[in-house]
Length: 188
Image (cartoon, rainbow, N blue to C red):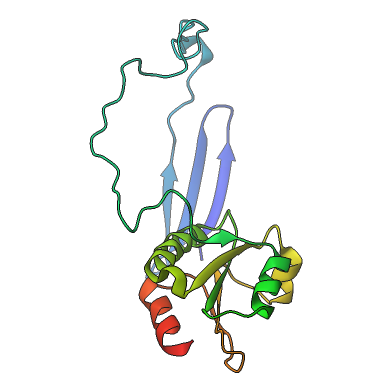
């Protein structure tokens, strides 16, 4: 069992750790950080070019060169194919007549895996074009709808078939693009 003791003095902090070894004899380790810097030895530079009022806000005044042109093609579009919808719009879309499967992404803007999943969903929407409708619902904006849909983990995907006799398929967490393709192609 490890014991932690901290002794403090005005300028030096000493931390002692006691560990039990196999021979049941304690080992004492002592760490001493460097002494703090006194305020008299710190020099400040009052002429900082970043904060002066006469300089432009950019750090560089030379124009930037473009190293490579942005890619153009089927997989890069300026507008997003996956559109954000409200709870009422999603419910109307599910209840309405559809000829294509529906993929609903429950996400949050602060969720790292949701951001990664959004990139894959955009690629999926480009790949399937008009054969699959991909939408997303922000769980922070539509909290009650997410609670009613029993969304516990983010991101959560619902795959809804246009055939009302088939059950919806639900996944939680980050899933690979190939798994989404398999669900759409074979299950819906």
